[in-house]
Amino acid sequence: MAMATTTIKQVLHYQPEHGVWFAANQALFNRVAAFYFEVIQAHEKVLTLSNKEALTALEKLTHTTQKNPTPVMPLEEILEDIPAMFRRAAINAALGSARSFHSHLARWRKRKEKAEAKGKKFHERPPVPPRTWNKSAILYVGMWKERTDTSIVMKVWTGTWWSWIKVRITGRDLPGAAEMGSPSLIRRGNQWWLHTPMEKQFKSPGKIEKQVTTNAHTKMCAVDLNINENLAVCTIQTVEGTILATKFIHGGRRISGFRKQQLGRIARNRRKTGIIAEGEQDNVHLWNKIRHGDEQVAHVVSARIVQFARQHEATILVFEHLGNLKPAKGKYSKRGNDKRAYWMKGRIFTYAKYKAYNAGILTSRVNPRNTSRECARCHSLVARYNTGQPAEGYISGAPLVFCAQCGMKGNSDRNASLVISQRLITRYQKAQEKPPTPLARERAEKSAGVVISQDAKGKEEPSIPQAGHGETNEHGTAQDVSLRMEKCTSDILCQLRLPLE
Ligand SMILES: [Zn+2]
Image (cartoon, rainbow, N blue to C red; front, top):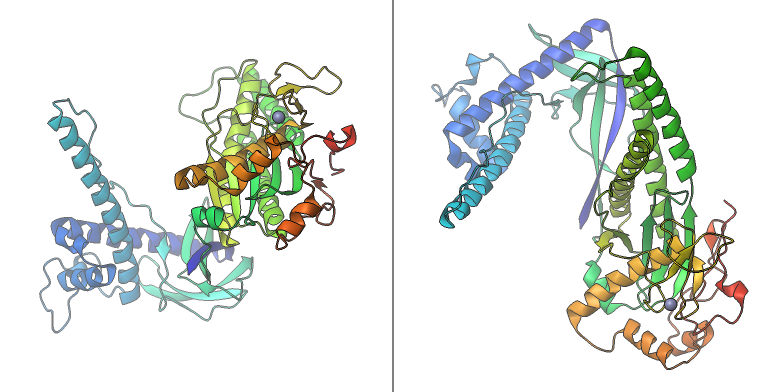
């Protein structure tokens, strides 16, 4: 079984003094967590235990009871009568930080040893334990009750006593089918939020390697991300090479224009105010606007990629590694815009990855080298050119490709997405080193000059679902320009069909 987690974020509505209480509550939570971090530092062996055993051991070291009247490091020195569930949440927070710190430390020691063994000087500084604590208080069961869609009753430290308060909630309702984790009290600016993790169990998808090497009908959704108008171009392809659908996700010009407008405003404001104070962000509002725009587009595009993959029952999502941002030429604002577009590409990948996982789809990345320059049909170098221009040369970012070797013509981003999914297949087939793989066979047939129609293929392997043309194409998809055909029988087949989105 696999687990998917989402966090439901809800706004809390409370009286002004409750805001002060939430802050006092969080401050106490951090004092207690920091205290336990110290206890763990003094008793490092605790870290070799499981979380449950560690909790018991740490309570024995700190918690005064009749059976345990004189603990080594009493928690009472911080505050008496801390509720057990408050204490336990803080202990687990401290354990998490301590485990992370000690594994960093162990890795640092290893690197140091290695360098010294080779006689090299080692300049890297050791990791330091947290100097300040700014964790959000987690409310274990016992610290809250009577939760509905619109309210919750919570026990908080007011600064002087413990109090139960009822608070109104607005925002997304909790989904019914998932299991609820412990909510956290989160401060964002002056507003307090309730974040609730929701866990959903589902059947784990098979490993990508297994899917690719054992089932020729496994469907992959390959995605070419761009910073031009086509933010994402997705194609659905089976492992044995049938292309089932293509989708162009537009909107690059719009978000780029939006950024350009905001960056222009920032530049004008800066000219007006002159020198910018060091270490201080100027034009905060405008920068936030840009960031929110990028975030929103990343969420929408990633959601549509995953939706498209699900529609076609793809079980693998393939991207290319993003590589390094090439230093762009041009004006400052153009470079700034490109930098953000590039950052947004990374966001689209990250969001698509977790959204896909929640849908039982695994994500992989392949080597990005020359994915745009290679012909998806015959792997020769392609010409890339603009509409209305001769099909020769290579203009980076131009919308059309032509392969002089095999005659393939089409949209360059779509071609790139096909190359991306083929790379994933090749990777695992190479790893297996079994010669009669589906793709290799297909290539052999091609080079023998046999025209394979979808129908003939369908008879040979009757179990291919949806292999035929047409029926799976909907609005927003471009029809298959069939890479499996030996040569294009008409120019129409070879031409790009842009969706009317
Ligand atoms: Zn070609």
